Length: 335
Image (cartoon, rainbow, N blue to C red):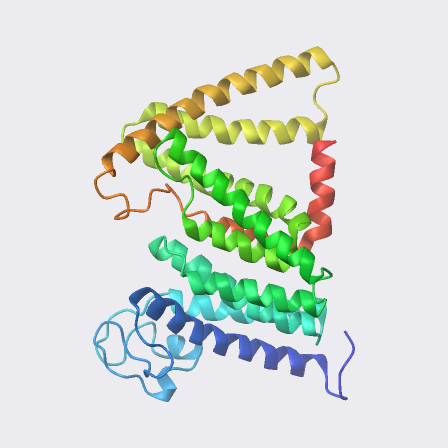
């Protein structure tokens, strides 16, 4: 990467990384006060445990956490590891954008997108809550970017992408109402997909949505399987394991071209289909049971067994940096 205005690359890299750390520090405030409903613009930073207001040197991103050894200067309670992690991730993502896309309008837009991507991930992970206005702001950023041709799609493609993403997930979620008497996905997941469609367009969603299901499968299913086994629900644990194993097997068969004989391949497909049918039957039975248990107060607990928002956001991250490589990998595995 060439220097700009006669200044070396490391100068801009350091500057952008520090901006990312500062944005990450503010993002922590946005996340926590967004969940609690507190004012985050006018109110000064304070310790969530003892409510003492923090001085400026206690608010230096990343360095204050290290200097204070992860403890509040007043009450000596441990400071959540979330604070330095969010700050560091935000700084690194800003830095990656600069190294890959340079000092461009695309980098500026990506920094705004990453800010809200992280917010959506953390709130969904912590409380299984998607704060609606985070997704709406992301969608607005996508529409503005499409007008400026930042992501190589026009405003019509952006609008179509937003509508396709939202209605695809809404229809999918409401199928759950017919099968297990409850949505398969929360309304927040539909809003995230709306935002992703506005940013990337409908064609990119053909990659993002399957990729998000794959990410959710590899990260969530092992955890759900272990949880079910600990609760002595061995059939359910086996069902989750078979779903994961079936997906891995399908990829391996195409990747390594294991079956030269079409008849053998047909037997494999039938066997996998039967195993998946058995597994999904057990999983749906568990979902129906949970729906019946929550029928009195359906909104008190998040029905989703694992938050799906982070998987959608992770898929968005991957598409930003490795879209062409992912498309090649999908074609290679499928054909």
